[in-house]
Amino acid sequence: MLIRYNFNNYCSFWGDNEFALIAPKGKVKRRFPDNFVENGHGCDCLKTAVIVGENAGGKSNFINGLKYLKSFFSDNQPVYSYPVFLNSASVDFQKDQTQIFELEILAENQIYRYQLEIDAKGIIKEKLSFRSEMKDKDSLCFIVQRMDDGTYTMSGRRLSLPPGFEKRNANFGLFITKLALLGNEHALRVTNWVNHTLRVESLAENYEEGIRKTHNDLAILKDERYLEIFRMVDHSICGIEIDEEKPYTKTLIIRKNQEGRLQKRELAMDSAGVREFFSWAVQIFRVVNQNQVIFADEMDRVLNPILADRVLAYIHGKKHCGQFIFTTHNVLHLNLTTFMKEQIYFITKNKDTLISELYALSDFPEVRYETTKIYEFYMKGILGGTSYE
Image 1 (cartoon, rainbow, N blue to C red):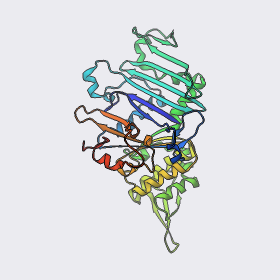
Image 2 (image 1 turned 90 degrees about the vertical axis):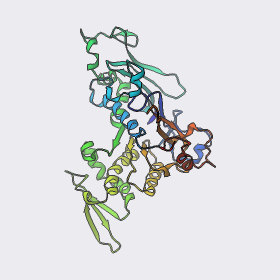
Image 3 (image 1 turned 30 degrees about the horizontal axis):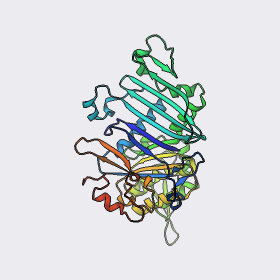
């Protein structure tokens, strides 16, 4: 499970930004017993979170930043900061730009903290540490640092690299992936978590082109539990006939009318809401049944508020170790009957500097569960994240 994600200097974001999925302590947890997972490591994790903000505020940049970090793990390509992904305002203040990413996760009963700092030349620092309990002191797995002369040290000892390799230091991937290939158990757990447990999804691109159609995708679509999720969009749906060649367009949606007659329609010919939810239902299945961590950009852009609430209730009501985080424009999610304050995040962009900022509703101590009307506060610009401020 994801405990915490920190980043600095990505697109519209500059400065330290923290996204945490740690359940609060005290009586609040008794009000929302289904919203978190007790994992026994001193860091009970939240199952869901919602990120609200105005158009062009930085919500997609937040999602894409995770995708950017994940790409370093998945394809093992050269690791360095690309100018197009740097904050434009930061370039005016600093000549040598750095990007920092930090993940804190729970994987196979260990808490891992992975840190990566990069610039245009390559990796500046990469560090992995672990512990069994949140209160414990970190144990170092490895730390790689680039020295002023361009050489690298690992855990304090200089790395012996081939002649001239330091001059080409941007041409190799992460050290953690190399250690994973060599069988280091801690590196393996973290790389497996990033590559297979963490999923960053967006329907801004064509779903069929943007996501590989694997055997696992088809297996999910054929699972009876998937139909249970998909039927939330329309309870007249009683079955589906999967087209294995083009499952996201040619699959037949089967409905039963009041007279008991069956009606079949190709998914591509169905409503936009049904088509998109057919795809998102796969991700919800992964959260609840495969314990995956899903970041979804504007999952409910065509879903009505009732369906969105139904999805959240379904995720909260199931026992699992998955997590679902989504960005939205739907201000009806701003309520303290569905979410804890720690589950509601805002992203707002400063109109003068054009720098985005990420923060949680829990950062506002004056907000009280009993009295505060979050929707009204938000629309008045008191909480930021709107174009009205």
